[in-house]
Length: 238
Image 1 (spheres, rainbow, N blue to C red):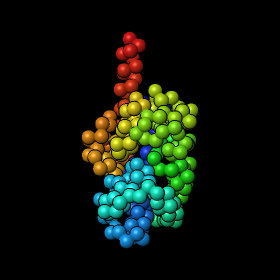
Image 2 (cartoon, rainbow, N blue to C red):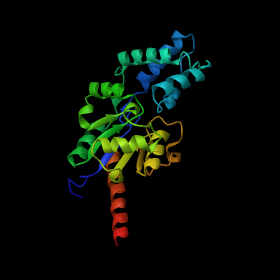
Image 3 (cartoon, rainbow, N blue to C red):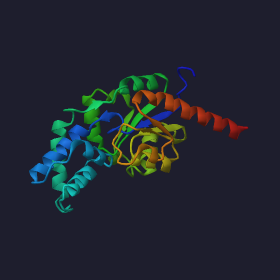
Image 4 (tube, one colour):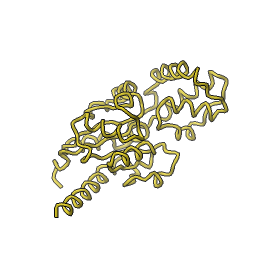
């Protein structure tokens, strides 16, 4: 393949558990909220599986797992407390997974358009990626507040790709959990599943197209998917 063979392709990435290892800071904030309300802390590693649906889902699941009844009337105030604490600690421990920066640079250098499609609120995503010097790699960072529906709706992914001038028919999703594979399937877009993420479901059961055990493997997986696309296109043309 030539060095510009990704021209016209858009690669959309999930954030938490795919680009960045964020669970220590997210669960740290959750635990401070739990302690504040007289509840036991969530074990750090097991609580990582709660991440994926966004901060509000993490908060609700965390409180319910701690044995507390979830009160929708108090949820907005609790959520604002959570966000305020998380902003203060958003990059205490969060770091890109090994290989992320090199891979993003390689993909962009080969002509791909890169974007983020995450269930994390856009302002929080931009803050985190900015602090980690990753925001510069993406044409857009698209949280659920910038689209008509959040993952696992395919609308999230389709609208994110179109927002950066991409074609959903020439796009690939890279994620780690059911919202990512669900959105990709709904949008008719192939999905690469990172096995090192935060899914409570076994990666092989998520219904993705390719599994990768390290971020360094993402570029090769994309090449394989695009090669399959070219073969299918040639067959249709024939």
